[in-house]
Picture: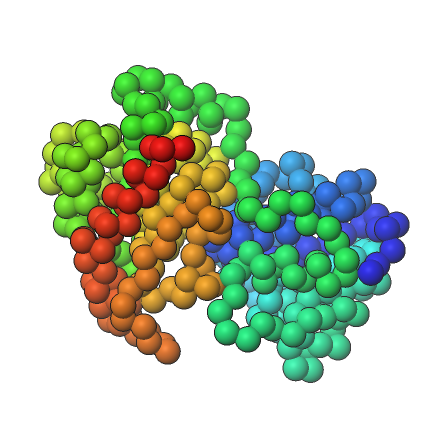
Length: 344
């Protein structure tokens, strides 16, 4: 347990879209426990799209990051932390659970109370630490366990994404202008961060055709950077009752579109985590991904794990793992889930 008179808090967390979204319930819980504290977050600028500054976190301090890699030198990060140290933080929360760099930065923040995961000699960087769980463990709980160890209360475990009123209107206007209705629209996001982590577009087309033929639904295809040709190809192959999502230039806009759908289907990718945050039921196709770590969080979702399970995956193994998931495997789950949703 820690004292309640915490007025100045630092959170450390940077990463890809999914990494950041899976930390949002922990960030929200910190705010709920200390509603009057000033919260500063050391992160990358993608976080501001997920939870704009001022919504939960008072201030973001950014490090430079490109894709999966931090571009900024450790020396520059040390300078930033040294400047932040002058704020005299009461509490520093390290949510980078396998980063030795983050452990050092947490220590150098000078916070009176420093919490994180135990990591060999870096355990000395914290005043409170817990050991890593053995085996698969969901990312949501990896984050939440950091603050639970110091007695913080967690009211809501589901991750969250902010949606602006303007983007809610944008999504509603798009659905209205295309005569789309939530109870009859299924969203498919066929893209992935890398081509070897994507399911074959021909299989998405077959799945879309089956859904259209049996249930007369509309398939809404969402897409990101460099994915327009992919969704256009799937749409042309699947034929009638498919429509391309408008370009979504922000996480908020993408979230608003997905929230207006009854079901979301994809591989393990950033937009899947967006769908998770807005509580749209998901059917997720997991190739190399361990469901214990990264399946959609919550009972409303369904996961299809590849039968090809290895200790480690090369790029080619990742492709083979997704190829091992056949259309029938997915159809059986989607068909069952759609019928379940219609009965609610």
